Length: 406
Ligand SMILES: Nc1nc2c(c(=O)[nH]1)N[C@H]1C(S)=C(S)[C@@H](COP(=O)(O)O)O[C@H]1N2
Ligand SMILES: [Mo]
Image (cartoon, rainbow, N blue to C red; front, side, top):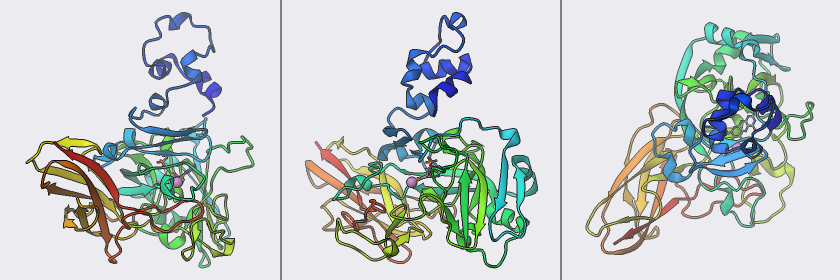
């Protein structure tokens, strides 16, 4: 965020929030003066995040959770990862926000105000898993450039909005439509208004699913600015890069959308496996669609100690992109043997599923708990790293935590 502009528009009350206390002599502070703590703002206060979140980058802002922070069934905003490709929009004028639907494959160009969208179409609420395609990137070798996400770039919040399908039906879509591309109000790092930081999208078949929303609320409130206020596309189960934030234009394309970050090695992986470090030709790269089967132990925190003779109750979540999770297992012997966990059904399609298990340890000492999910097609998580790819996407290796029995 441009700090100058941010400061100019900030009221004394909001400043108090950012400096983390009452500005005692605030009333005599020169107009336009920038308090020192603004020059290096506390990102946790700035975005209302828990201070145990981990900042990976500040230009643009990127922040991830730790496994134990994701213990809630529905992820609260304070534990939700932030992934920005550019700068957060500075002047969000909700009253005059317009969504335009255009492109080669619309019957006519149509525009909607937020009020139009909210009043014209039925509202729907779903819990939807959003995982960054690069979650887990930090483990690949040779290393991949980009944010070094460990395991915390995933969330499952409750989103409310209108079905994209209902809006597209109202606009009128031609038979040759193949892809939807989003355009948004965020700002390119260069501040060149001609450039978009990112403009991705989904095939029409994904756009038409019940759960694909144009959302205006998250967890029952306005979407926080950093997560896409006032309007966000939400396509659960797909790389979260397809869930465009701050949406002001949708293009219905008669070709695969070709916006920034649709081509090259962005959000694409080799169509068939390659050796680590291999160079892959553009034509041999495929766009990531449904995310792979994955799970996370969210309780206890890695490093926990328990007394000998006591059972340990573990819990967490598992998700499988477009599919359902069918089986959840854990191992305390480095994957030699596996035991079944209790696994709940999803509250709706594309929501993560909760698991738990009650574990007995044979004696004092160091253990690791490994968790492994299997999807409805029978595909299980790999125990260690899956296939290497140039940008380090889709690491769905088993999550592991360390435990000491004392
Ligand atoms: N307009 C816009 N939408 C965006 C992005 C962005 O930079 N700009 N980042 C995408 C990526 S790569 C991810 S992983 C998710 C992150 O969503 P979150 O920050 O709300 O967790 O938003 C996606 N939507
Ligand atoms: Mo992402």
